[in-house]
Structures are given as structure tokens and as C-alpha cells.
Image (cartoon, rainbow, N blue to C red; front, side):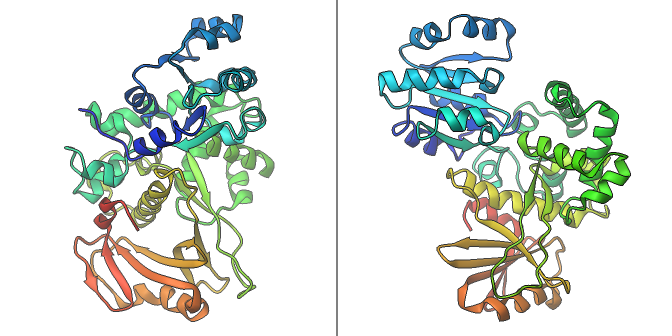
Length: 388
């Protein structure tokens, strides 16, 4: 079954405007499948194939000229010099949609592409399935605990692979392919421990020094390892919202995983039935909701204007969206029963930022919406509509 991804229309549109389209995202997020479906006439090459890589390196200009209908080049970061050749090629031919690049590393962090293809490539990010994409397919998206535990990687759905089979292999493959190549990671077992410690801190403020002590490495090493995880789309940091209204705000970012299924695997959760009573279930739910909000922006090729807010006395709002000078404030609670104190953070925030607040939401793990006046109390599954 072909599941049409939300990013598809945006890529088609951008391919009419730019000579190069760059699609990044986690391994196994469906990049290759999506690109092949959109551009069936373009020849596909993966530079992970040693023979293909050698072929391209031996005669790069000839390779680019040979295919008149265009090229798809997967894992292009494995040949950084390629980007300079592509610059010359697309400038020479001056046509839109000539080449599609894809890769599982964040190209924005690669100096070569920012130097060589600036202004020539549109960069989009394909994340694992969104709730809206699942809802518009034949796959079941109705069970919250199942979604948290299973995660949203396409192969889990397309091939009906059990999470307990998929994620250990995913982690091992990730370590073998990506991490082993890095010089500052000499002990893979310590790095795996670091990964698991990160999962245990999901949705929490990052404490670099604490992680360094637990792993027995320096704080600079921990920061370098986080850079690796960010570049490979394993984790991301949510930055705190700041302005001049309050100087007593937390400035430390919070840690999230791009997929809760991967986090569950690292936490040792081996079956869905164990999730409801897990001490981090609320954090996993919060991570899931934040991911879904992120995907709504990334699927429009827009960087999500998303933050959290917390002051040094403990007042907090889980998610702040800032758009056109206005704020949407969102609190996230995994419980199914509403309690008035769930709104305390939003109420406190409103007193400080009322002039710029457009709307406020409380998103819960319940399956029904509640009308509470100014603050909309919504079920988690309203995100299947794909808009917020």
C-alpha cells in the first residue's frame, strides 16, 4: 500500500522552483520511498553502495551529465566533494528539479552543502509518520499506548515488524553505520549507556555535567555526543522561550527524541502493556505531542517556531508556538481525567503575556474534548486533523 506523505505536495512545488531538492531525516523515515514515488523518471543511486560511490568519484561530471531526466542521489553526504560538482552542473543547465539529494544526516550541519548549494537547493525534512498520515491510511491510529510504544517509523507499519524486533536492530545499525565512524567515540558500550541515559531524561532539562559523571567522560564529550545524536535525527533540544518581560527564566533546553518507540526500546519497555504504569509515561506522551506539532511544520517545509517556557520558581508551559508576533500556549497532560490544576501553568503564563497570546490549549490523554471557556481542552487525537 502506498501511503501518501504530507510532505509530498511541498516537494513537488519546490521542485518547480529550485534546481536541487535536498531531503533529510532519520534513517528509515521513508525518504527513498517518497522520492522514488514523486520522481519515477529520475535514476536512483545510493552512495552507500561502494561500487556506485566509486563510479561517481571516477567521473563525477560525466555521471551528472549522463542522465537527462535527472538524478536521485541517496546518502550524498558520503561524497562531500559532490556538492561542488552539482553546483557547476545545475548552473550550467539552469533547470528546476534537476537533482534530488537525500541523506540521514542533517545537511544543514554540513559545511559543504551550505557553501556550494546556497540558494540552489530547497531543504526539507521527512520525519517518521505523523498521526495525520496514519489517520488517512488503513493503519490503526486509535490506541494511544500502542502509538507511544510502537513509534511511527514506516517499516513498523508497512512490514508489520514488532517494535521489539525493529528497534534493537535499528540502534545497532545506527551505531555500526554512523557512530563507529566518529573518532571521539572509542567505547561503543559507553555510548550506548549514554543513549539509554538520554531516554531516561526524556522531556527533562538537560544536565550535561550529570551525564558526564554517569558516563565517566568529560562534559565536552557529552556535548559532542549530543551533536552526533542531533545530526543523525535521534534527539533534539527544545529551547526555552525568552523575552524581556521576565529575567528569572530557565535558559536550559529540554531533551526529546524524534520517535517515542525508539525511546521506549532504550528504556527497556518490551511490550505495550508495561507502558501505562511506567514512571516516564507522561514524559513519553509529552514527547509524542511535541513531535506531532513539529511534524505539522516540517511537513510544510517550515522550521517549527516551538519553545517551552519555565521560570526559576517552577511555573511552566510545555509548548509555546510563536507566529507573527502572537503566541499559542499549550500544556500537555497524559491523564484521562481533567483536574483544574492542569491549567495553573497556562493561567500564570496568561497573566504575564496576555497581550500577545492568541490562544491556549490543554492537550490530554483523554478521548473526548471539554469546553472550558478561554482554554480549549482537547483530546490527543485532534492532532490527526494535521493542524494546530
